[in-house]
Length: 254
DNA sequence: ATGGCTTCATAGTGAAGA
Image (cartoon, rainbow, N blue to C red; front, side, top):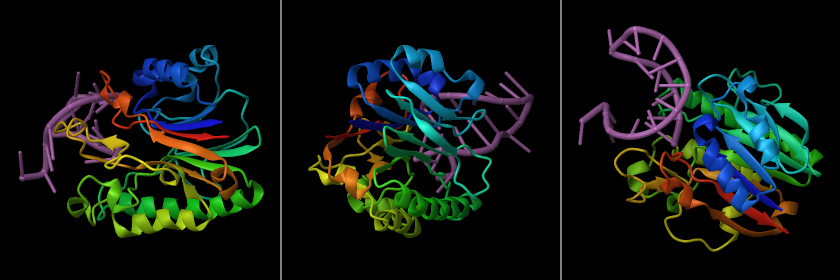
């Protein structure tokens, strides 16, 4: 089973790249973030022709998440139960007995911002919800754009980023809290190239200089982690014309 | 230097992303 997550930064703009890539990669499950598409405009038909069922929760201009799967997903939950949120950032679905949670964690803007407090409260709600979901579903994967670089090695210049949003201690503590629930970072189950990142700023030629962060993650429950055989970042898409600023992350399970 | 690019939005001194 192959799982993938990709922040597409507009599904409308990135649909041709997505269709080409899933045609080549053939993932079984794909989580998308920042679709920026209202549900009425979601490209259900194009994805069906590519072999994917889709569940989605979108809104105009911002946010928006979706789960694509080769077998029909069910038991959808939109948003974090009990956490009032106008922003479409979370979607859970069950695919062939595996619980898949697609998350687009708030950016936070800066550590002084109200959006940062929203980010931390969102992460606290996610943590509480995941605790419940893990009890119900031993086979669980949490995929998405976490907007958190967990460790120094996930940041091109940790001294520059220390204390900044995406790399502040409270954010990293929230990420470690998710690991404390028994989730494993699939990317770190395997040897990886140094300076592996999943996001590069559009500005300042950041991609070509590899000035990036690893902020997109696939966390796996113990049961799924035991089946993991590979994980990697699909860096090639970031080099295309009109790329998303994020690269897909892939995990392969037996 | 708080910019730099990209998207969706509207016609804003844009907003938001990360």
